[in-house]
Length: 246
Image (cartoon, rainbow, N blue to C red; front, side, top):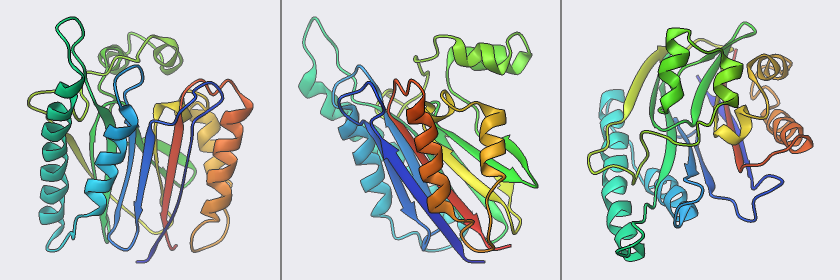
């Protein structure tokens, strides 16, 4: 099955710089969104380093081999960013050069997500939008237990992430394996997008796609970013859409 994709990233309405980065490699079945940690040193360096490192992978062999290659690369970047951050440290101010990341690998009817932090992967199937990844932040446990609603979780102060590339001495990436069918639409995004456009609105917008190949993805990505910018858009925002032929 052939894949098409479209991605956009924007600094938003309030930030002076964009610390997000995106990667599209439909020829290799690889996509990623990285969100540099706002308020930390060189968040844009962190996100760009992640995407550049993943873009350089050859990704030969089986799907398991490719998953291992992506995981190993992200762990190497984690160590490199930790060492880079030491250049910014002082006795009074320890520095973190870090970024969240969500990456996607596809092979025929199987998709694999690898992530750290609160950038997300969604799958739209038959008009139903499902979140594949689970955020790494203190509120996620409350959301999973039903103690808070999705709206309450998004309104809470969840800017603190419990995992990030460059943020831990020993980084653990979460991995999710899921099935793919013709007609599925996959969306990778940073929190700057899903905090502006909540679940039901995203589901409605993505369900309006048309056409067999590509689903008019460029139009969809532009519409998603435009709708975010019509709101507060206080953070950088990024989105990558990937779809396969019906």
